[in-house]
Image 1 (cartoon, rainbow, N blue to C red):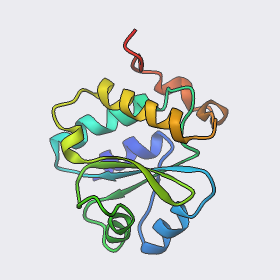
Image 2 (image 1 turned 180 degrees about the vertical axis):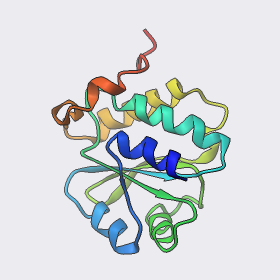
Image 3 (image 1 turned 135 degrees about the vertical axis):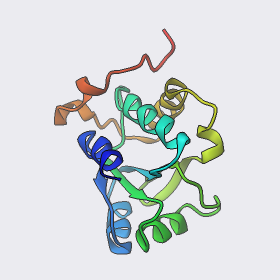
Image 4 (image 1 turned 45 degrees about the vertical axis):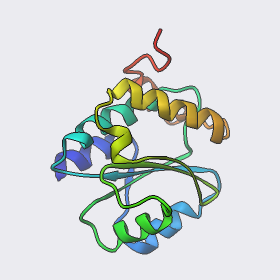
Length: 151
C-alpha cells in the first residue's frame, strides 16, 4: 500500500484514516476531490494517472483527499457520503460545500485511458470548482502530463 499512498501524497492528496477525518474534509468550504483508492486493482492503476493528469487543468478542486478501500471506518463514512452510488473501488468523487456533485464509479474508470479520465474530471472541475489554481502550491507544472483537451 505504501507505493499507492506515496503516489497520491506526492500529488498533494491527504490520506483520511477516520470517520472524523472524512467528515472534516468534506465539510470544508469549496471543492474537495475524494479518491477511493484500491491497492490490488488494475482500474486503480488507470485511475491514479488520470487523476494526476486532471490536476493540470486550468481549474482544480481546492482540496485533494483519499481513502483506501480497506480502511474502516473512513471508507464507510466516505461511501455513506457517496449515496446513491453503490460502493465502488476505485472511485472518484467531487464534492462542493459538502455535497456530491460529480462521481466516477469503477465502471466509469475501467476500459478508459488516463487521458479520458482526466478529460472527464477537467470538465467537472470547470463546472463545479471556483477557480482554484493548484499552480499556487507549486504542484501544477509537475502534473501537466497529458493533453486534457485532446489537442
